[in-house]
Length: 185
Image (cartoon, rainbow, N blue to C red; front, top):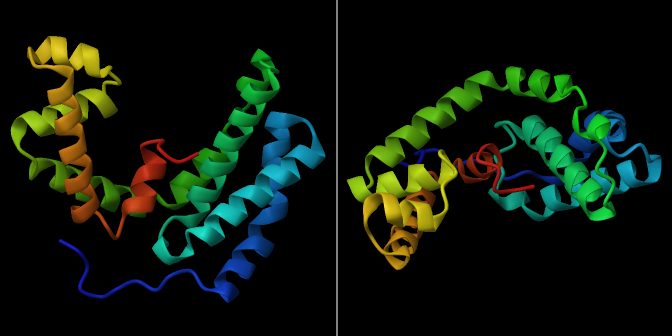
């Protein structure tokens, strides 16, 4: 059930404050992955641009810091992939900063997990099963279809319905949910 008190979106003053507080630290964090100061700054700038573009959907009181660290990490990994610089030392970087950021937002994450569980419990059983097999067990649509003895088109229909329903039930938490599930990089 959506909150009765609408959240305020991220405004210019809050955005500038976030930028000043986190940009330098995020650049240092990105450097652990990409080992190129210019690329690290570019990645961080793109993350802040994306944040600004999504400002209407963001409640500044929620886990924005976790979003920033996760988005920088994902963009760094995409950069590494795109540059074809797969080095195990780069991919084995200590993620202590992310763990620290997530610990800080533990209560927001716990609340979100409760909301996701509640929303999933409202889905029809087969729809919920398909969603959980896809997102939590990381099964392909083909594997799900085989295990449940249904067609891939039916799996796609269940996934589409599940995502639509989750959007409605979790509209106040959508951005954070997508980050946690790894659907936004």
